[in-house]
Amino acid sequence: MKVEQNESKVKVLYIVGTGHSGSTLLNLILGSSKNAYSLGEVAHFSQSGLQQCNCSEIISTCDLWGEYFSKFSLGDTEGIYPLKSSFKEYLKFMFACLLKRNRVGLASLFSGKNYADSVLYNELLSKVKGSIRPGVEILIDSSKGFNRLFYLSTLPGIDLSVIHLVRDGRSVIHSYEKRGYSGFTRIFKWLLINLQIDFFCKKFMKSKSLRLSYDQFCMDPSLALAQINSFFGLKVDTVKYLDDVNSSVNHNFAGNHHVSRKKIESVRCDLSWKKNFSWLKATMLSVLLYVPNKIWVYPSKKKLKEVKE
Ligand SMILES: [Zn+2]
Image (cartoon, helix red, strand yellow):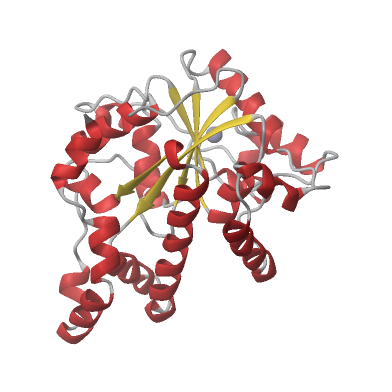
């Protein structure tokens, strides 16, 4: 099955999911597609002036982003739709998901707002096609945030498609704990956010969204990339994708810098939670997360092959 394309709109492939779900790696690999360009986590753009871009320049002087930074940070608009939103807004979105029948209904939540995302995407696409990669038709935004997906889905000038990226909850919790965050609250956030994304995609973006297990992607990247190519019309080389990533300069400025600024030797599953969690903790988490992991992260390979065909 292929996503229907609308020729008159800017095509954006949005990667949505929780933190630490592997989006930096996926974004870089998909960005090696002959007809797509990876922008990275665009939601951080307005606050990124002094951050270093992966091209080694800071954002405000980078070849790709520099001119837009001054324009969208100091212009008449409210900038780019931010990644973080208030809890009140989160509740508003949750009820809107339940009550509204279609995406036109969702747009009423943003009346009076003047964010510049559509303009930025259009200008970036022209610039990328003109001076970086002429064959580009699709921009990839790996901001991950659900609220941003919600907002982008209401913009009439964007032909939006979505990858809902889900990683084994035990690996996500382990990744947060390694960086000093509490794993306990993350379990519930992981569940709630993925439930919300799943519900949203099924209700509002059914033919334009694909759920991707990060763990199955790592087990068989070529199969997963073939599936993604087929669904979204991308042209990622399913054999030489790492050569393509490592041989090109990217202009991403957020995400996991340990991944995005180093040569990627291989794609492999990180199961270090098995070594580092106590037996009791590993068992409790495995029981608690059994059902969502089974549905979201470890669907049968037979099912993956059926989708690919
Ligand atoms: Zn750059």
